[in-house]
Length: 439
Image (cartoon, rainbow, N blue to C red; front, side, top):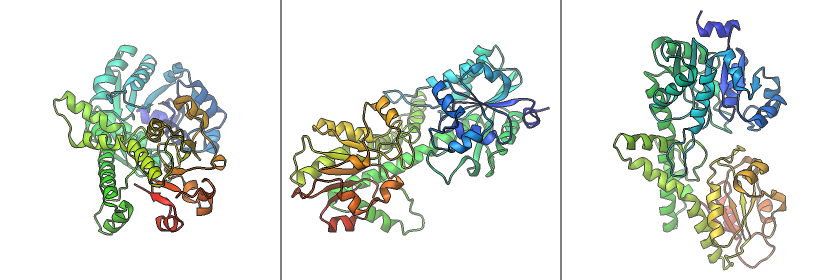
């Protein structure tokens, strides 16, 4: 019998290594069809899952509590599975070179517990070649098994969008690949159990790796173009959002908007591609130019905030600036690689320590990783300037009365309002005397 048939018959299990924003929803989805072992080294996270708590908010506490996933922080449990999925983060180092430490560590854990006749599928975003050139040697060394003889590998890039309740694992076409036709067929059939939208069988593992890494590179470049336009139009005194609304009436105009580009996908993946290109003797121009623009937007926003304070005849040093939103994207609790921290750091260079509130973020996580104490929206008072940095739904619903309550009463100066994602009505606030600014 094949691994696919054994899974359906309950004769073996599917393992998921890395239970974060990507891995956990995959584990929960597969658990509805087959036996699933959910492994993560983070014992605290495993304890939360076992108690029915979803810290990622991706599937919700109820789904976690009712899921039949066998959550564990013991890698030895991986021996009970023959179909392994690895979905760990792939960040970059301080110099923006790929940090393969998590995927290498996961490969060692799987390799030490790899049984003959298994298939290992990687979902982590990597540059073309990592699965076969980096991961396979680790699997072989740790297991003592031979790839292609004793076990097989495949690659199926994750496409989960944290915080997105519309585009889910089930309704996004899944790219699948395998080291040979037999493996590809097995991998495809397994993923077809949970992906209602179907799968796309890539020509090779490297093709699948490349397809994933260019998805976010393409978005990064397009957002960088919008950010550059925003900088240009700001100097011209033209409202960028109004320009984009007008241009968007053409049928083939791409609907991108300027903004901060953080997180562990769009702001990271392009560096994996350019790193590999450098190894092959090619220096990227367009991709790195886009990265340079997007990486600088936090500093740019902070500088514009300072200029707005000066225009309002408000003292800069010690100014009371409130920032609404700290996560890397809207409606998501994840603060990893958030670019709002760049605004905070740059304001600090001007002697400004902002008050920061976030409707979604975990305050303890923010304090642990950034040394920042979040405050509540209701506790923000007497602000000179307010920066709406993240377009959480809660902030989109704010009224002019809600916003006014954040500022000093009758200070005699214009109220500086920085609406980075254009969630408020510009005309309404300008009519009320606000010094309104947006990207």
